[in-house]
Length: 362
Image (cartoon, rainbow, N blue to C red; front, side):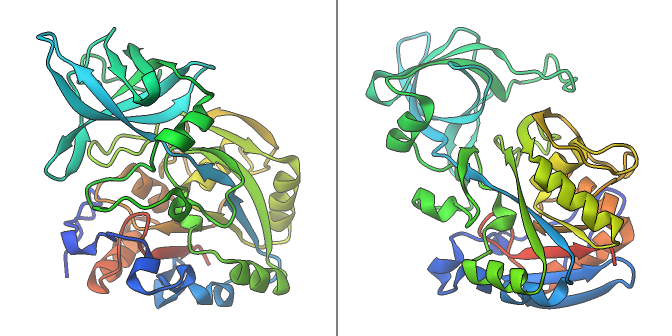
């Protein structure tokens, strides 16, 4: 067992606990990934398969899902140095700021797959497939980012493309992947059953294990599934930074369903940290949710608290990741440490193709 340092929610994640490929490549169906269910009120922990999810929810519960679809956000690029030499790099699209300007991340090829490229300069032009280009306009430093003067990971880039970005990436891009996934997988492996609106740089992976059968069984049990959209940007696996601003839209019908569940004492189950972020961004201080859309830079911490959500279905997160702060807000530190020690002891798999954790307040 790997001990977790409670003070920092830090622990050592063994390399062999990273899910290196989709469960389908391991001979499993999507809903056969493992599911750890932990109850904060009793510190009880159950180990099962995702196919048993309906057994842990009750009639009247509302499950909120993210219907954002993943795009081919990774593009091969060529970088030219001052001496005229060139090098192959990867450009990750994160979020659009306008018709032509995007937040992007540059990554250099490394022994572990890729790593952030941190020595780029304003005005650099990168060559992309089919004669397209990306020109670095300025470092992307949201108001919440106090790291001025630090190495730049994200840039604002002006894209010159032969087609609109979604058409272009569908043809020339590939899904973002990191060193723990050694093989390229087609985009369909990065879509959830709820995927409807393209826009996420990386898969809203907490919803990946849902199947039409799971959805039908939940519906028969009078558990209601309602949608929202939050388009994810690139993650920050190496830096463990807080999440950057992301685009969201919470329909009024979803807000009504959530408010109704809360008024009747039922659970509001967020499928993924993206859903938590979107719902909490449109909630009043008393937890009343109003439909709306925009950009959110909300960082959920124990000091801020949760106003709406009282259950979270999530993947397992890296040591010191900002998402752990969100889970701690629901569970408390002691319970979260207990659950993650159980996941490490039970050899659960991490990352987007890995296993899941259902965290219930009661």
